[in-house]
Length: 231
Image 1: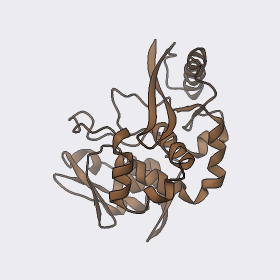
Image 2: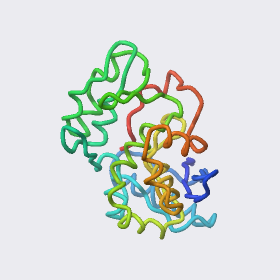
Image 3: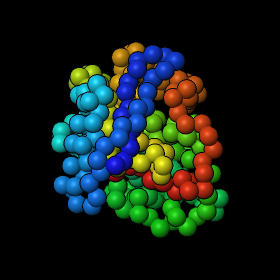
C-alpha cells in the first residue's frame, strides 16, 4: 500500500489548496504501464472518498490535458526566447559553491535536470532568474511562479480544469520532494476562480504574499535541497 496526495482547489483567498492523502494499492515497477496502474488505483481509492473526477498532471496521465500540463512539457517565454520550464528552474539555482548556471536555460528538460553541476555545487542557497533573486522560503514560491507564468496567457483554455475535483501527480512523493505540479495546478484553478491570477503575477511581493498561506514554509532539509521538478 502507498499514500499519495490529492490537491483540491478551494478557491478562498485565505485557503487556496487543500491536500488530502489517499491510500491505495501500489504496483511496483518502473514501466509506464505500471505507473498508469498506480494512477488508476489512486483515483479509484480517491473516488471512494468522494474525490472525483481527478486529473493526473504528469506524462503518465491518460488525458492529453494532464500530459500537456506536465512541467516537463511546458515552455516559458524569456528574454532569450522560449525555454523549458525545467531548464528555467534548474538554470536559476544558486548554490553555496556556484550558480546560477544560466547556460542550462538552453538545454532540454531532461538534460537540464541531469546537469552534473546541480549535484556538485553544495547546498541550495536560493534562485536567480534573469537577475531577480528568489528566496528558498516559501519553499514552492519560485516553482509555482514559473509554472503559473508559463500558463498565464491561456486562462480561457485552462478553465477546462474547473471540471475536476482535484489533481494528482503519481511521481510526487511528499516524503522525498517539495515541488509538485499537481499542487501548482490546483493553485492555478483557485486563482482563476477568484480572478486573481493576473494580480498574483504582478510582482514577486504580491505573488509571495498571496500564496504563502498554502506553501511549505519550513527550511529545506539536507535531503530535499537538490530535488528537481517532478516529471
